[in-house]
Amino acid sequence: MNCENCKIIKNIKNYTKIDYIIALVGNPNVGKSTLFNTLTGMKVKVGNWPGKTVSKIEGYFEFVKLQTNQKYVFKIIDLPGVYSILSFTPEEEITRNFLLTSNYDICILILDSTNLHQSLVLALQVFEITNNVIAALNLIDEAKRKGIKIDISQLEQKLKLPIIPIIAQTGYNIETLIDQSLQVIQQKIKSNPIKYSLPPELQNIVEEIKIELIEYYPELENNPLLRWIILRILEGDKLIIELIKNKKLNQIQISLTK
Image (cartoon, rainbow, N blue to C red; front, side, top):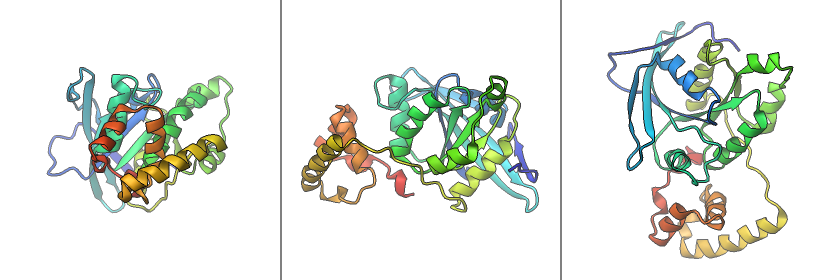
């Protein structure tokens, strides 16, 4: 798995264009910002998200394939650390809205090897709204010290997406993570993450709402986000309800089909 013929160049100063954009997503204290700093060398742009006091952090790095001398400039956006994207806090709202409405080429989802269950709660929510995702299994050294063993191959089969073990603090396997991310972007590797199953009673309710929603919004019939939209309506999601009322659901990027 190790990408021996890859190189990451930090603190790049001169570039004419950005080739790809990465959205970095994960729980608080999972090593997300450590990975960001490792990739960018602290070459960051800090501001605030529109209308929010939560910091917006962007950075840049260059990825080089040494055998072919192919070079790619990446912009990476460190989204706020969240435990969910149900839009109950400003951080959740920012992360959820970015994944829905912004242009990005891939989402790198940081999983905590020492607390995988908690990381997977967020992961399943992210899988509902984008297929453009790869997982970085961080803190594998800490998990080993605690006697935690994770069958990465089996986890990949269960979640149906590439999972790269990393140590963000030391930079271990970071080149491989970016190489695999590039291959997902270029559709050389497939990422088709699982969608969680609904209880039969809830599934019946979803189907009933689906019929009514399609009558009002015929263009949604083949929309891959339709189930997620309905579930958000049932949760009372203000953004989705407002978009439906104003017939502006087309503002949502259909990232599942990119």
